[in-house]
Image (cartoon, rainbow, N blue to C red; front, side):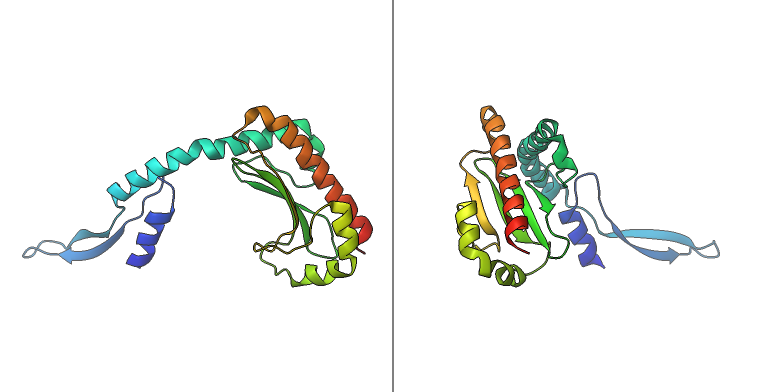
Length: 193
């Protein structure tokens, strides 16, 4: 149990601290028993302060992602119905097939952004390889990129060489992400049965 408490203290945010205590009872002569709590596992304050310094340097990075996706939804509110959400996450995933587990992913990083197709969360790439292979040449031509999958099991990956650190490029990035996602959705749904 101590290992679990240690893991929780190392992997949860600063608002949470976990302790493991050992309970014993003591009795002095004929007095009633009294509990004694001994702390056997506690958060490492030094480690937490290091984590806090590291995580606070990342706060701006993730705050920019939240700002970006919020601005994206303001500009393209219809994408919320497709599954696009504001938040501190790098990507949004739009399911495009009820028969097959296919998602169009839009992502934004500090220096790049992109669109790709993937299997559903936790699924292998093999079903999509089988599904896309007969239409590979046509899809590659229409989407303007190679099928893949790449080392991350992403298909038809496209990137734009600018990211959320370049606020002045946000309108260009948003338009490109929306147009590219629309192209991917329309092309795959019309080409692959």
